[in-house]
Image (cartoon, rainbow, N blue to C red; front, side, top):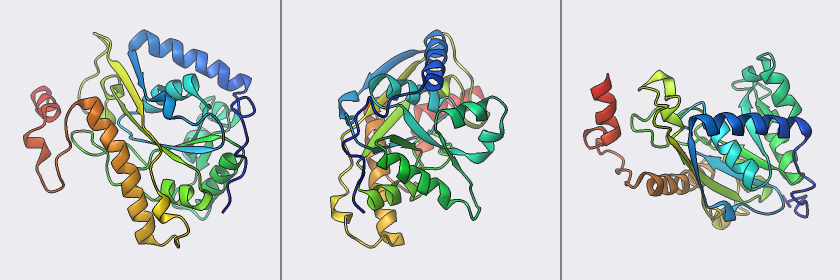
Length: 255
């Protein structure tokens, strides 16, 4: 499928008043509770639609990444669980800012893909958590990705920018695990990398093996960025990472 909207500029796809108002509130709150460290913003395309694939460690993640993205490029369009759109005030904000509802396990699940394609063709940035939910890994490494980001990228030709983030779990740990730390203020690190090379998949039939391989490559790029942020390598599959993980030892002592 030929990409459309590739000549769109940041100004054309710029934020509306509601988005700008929300950004002011989020930035103010985040500055109160955390420091920030942005890396790799030069990898974000200056124009045309693109996909951002991000790891997911906390419910604070969308605000940390959203702040980074809003500051450095096009405001993101997140794929969000449809149930969140039914929350008073929050749902109205999501609709007003063009966020994309995902009807999971329903005959309308494909609607999100169609909406994401339309956003890309309109020169927007579409943000996806490839895992589909918070990571369940005890050391907060990315889990196995779903194939949505790969399918969207291969069907549109839109570039995929990997993004890793770290630190939000200290403000709000996933699934209530661990302890919140607001003092000293944690640092929210968000790092973008160069586009994931999926050229060898272009023109291929979108079979399950192809989508799985492309998805693993995307998640691998995100994991490499996270390794750089954390200053440690993720152990190979089959190795007991909990035995050697400082994060796991710290959580166990607090339990």
